Image 1 (tube, helix red, strand yellow):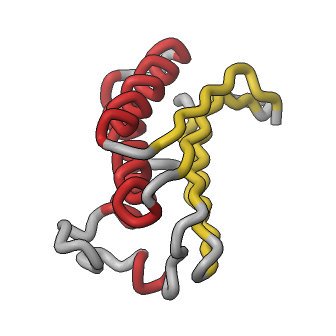
Image 2 (cartoon, helix red, strand yellow):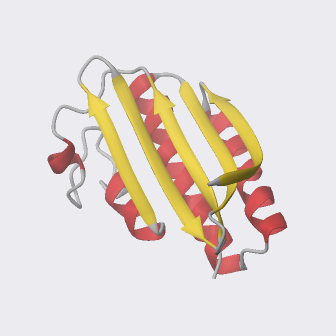
Image 3 (cartoon, helix red, strand yellow):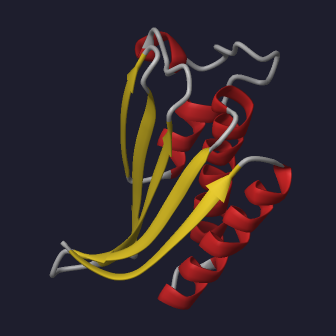
Length: 135
């Protein structure tokens, strides 16, 4: 897959979450995503970024425009070196939360995007990769 543009946003606080949201909205708009998909992508990155700040304390969001030869899209990698997720299957269930939130973060992000993958190990951090393809 060819990458056309890359953006890295370091996350430590609420202001960084806003920066990540603005960066992905600008990128998705410049790529030609419609308003509905821009909103989906921005919501997804907001959930991922909030998880990093809340659970890991700090981490990074990497955004990039991608092209697989047939179509173009946007890829988001959310990465941290935090405590990791002990039970990914449990974390992917609607309503599950460890922070008194609504429990829509990871499962909601998966529904908003076209592709979703997660890797996490206790004590080693978490990496989530999501993609949305331009229609």
